[in-house]
Length: 427
Ligand SMILES: NC(=O)c1ccc[n+]([C@@H]2O[C@H](COP(=O)([O-])OP(=O)(O)OC[C@H]3O[C@@H](n4cnc5c(N)ncnc54)[C@H](OP(=O)(O)O)[C@@H]3O)[C@@H](O)[C@H]2O)c1
Image (cartoon, rainbow, N blue to C red):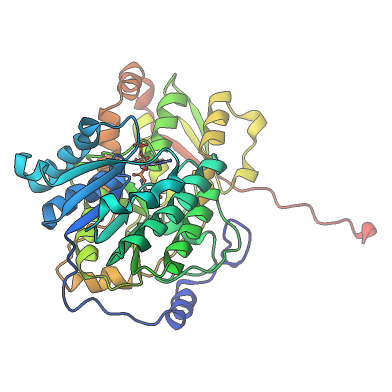
């Protein structure tokens, strides 16, 4: 049987995909000389990715950083995650000298007024746009933040005569495609998993069409560091899944558990791998580059492996694994598991697609000394362990149900019954 993607369309093999994308993108080379900016304007610095980016810029460049923030962020709330990350990355104490390199500027209430900031920002030679909305379900906000904010920022960028605009997109901006995501402008997909991916793709196109020299970075799903699992982000992606389980599946011992468990590699990116790749990408990517920041599929655990890891901990007696949501007998499963599956549905559906990514830039940056830790089952386990250790609900579950957890779970792959053959008489 041919492999299928989530839409039921036949999936291309890795070899076909590589051939296709190789013919589509012309090879670009790294810069001969490292890119340098003096004054960098950063959006989204109060968020997860933005704070990683600012900490890295403070460590790896000598530039002044101006953070565009909105109310009610004061200097303290802006700096707190940056200081934490900088100290972790630089392994030293935050100093007045570093502090003086960070300025804060307030965003106008109406983002359409952003270009009016040009006179106050004379001398800024680069913008790194990390602000974004990742709320899959809030379409107006996705459009306003991911698309319109980007459009207004690009008008400002043109007024400032920048040397570069860096846009933090996502590896999933391609939507569901039957081939590997090229490191190039994206074609329209067969389907988008969410409006999030559509708006990120739209923003990439605005950036490319702006006339401003640009670089697009496309990280996959960020998780904690490979070594210790330290995670500074909100509960998005895998953490959202673990949070859902913490809330809905740790109330009591569930002897049976029903879930959807695709066996395709799920691309996760350790936050220290993101920072390592960002450092070199920042200095060496040429204008017009789109970089997929992803882990190797060969080492990436599948959702099925992540579930196995979870059930090693919670230890139901029987786990029922389904290939897709259509196969789950929703009426017959416990209410909380039904609620969980409803909550996690989008993420599980995204994990059911065979995402493939070209990684030409990562490969080239290795020649510049990039040390990049791909996500693997053991490194993701480190992140899960850290999450569990930080969760009073899960720790309490583990203690309360220690006796029940003596069991060795039985795993059942539920194969859907095939549709009955039509009666001969009806033909
Ligand atoms: N986290 C990931 O795994 C991941 C992976 C790939 C790509 N990305 C991309 O990285 C970007 C940031 O994600 P994140 O994880 O850092 O999210 P986050 O922690 O929620 O941060 C979002 C940032 O955007 C700012 N922002 C949101 N709406 C805004 C608005 N209307 N006006 C001004 N600023 C606004 C937030 O400011 P406030 O603090 O004021 O809310 C915050 O600084 C997104 O564009 C996302 O697509 C994230």
